[in-house]
Length: 244
Image (cartoon, rainbow, N blue to C red):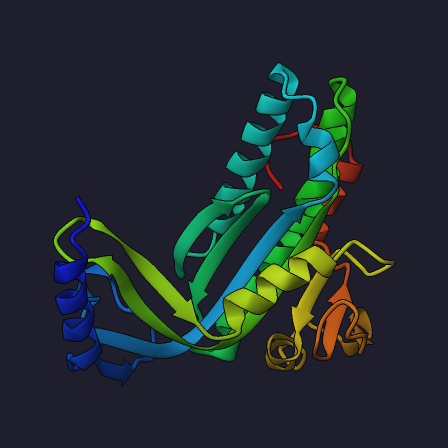
């Protein structure tokens, strides 16, 4: 039973306790987080938001269940291609991943994941159509920032999780809602994410479109429709083998 007298003492104890915040190159392993510390480090996030899900979810039938399981399973598998992921999850109609990205090339690898997801949707929709399902659209949002990461919850209960304080996750989530809507392209990224990848080898500035429209996002953002060319070529060849 909730004891408000004990709660007062617990709140005062937390508010007056010492919290050590350290800057780290990479996100530390889970066991390094305690209720008395926090970490500052460069983090990138990708959110894949399913479009028109409200209409899709009205059916609540066996086909919807199979579609959602196939979609989430394969998006998560693509996210796992990059070993620097720290957290992968599902939030409503979004599948997301959070990566430790201490260097620009690490942020570039998250961009490559976005291109692979974008290409995957071409294959997925072809297979949906071939098997009598309605096709779906997604928006892919990308963010990067130096995040403050803390462990929060109730000590001693086993109920806890990390809280990410900064712009990487917030920007990625918000931009996934903007992408593939209102005439914007399927991949949308924050300025910080764009500035870290645009000069990397193999990337070209003319892939990206710059936007300033605070009706949708309160800062400058960039969009593109980049694909994984090997994957795309395999799809165009009719998906005749199992490798791409």
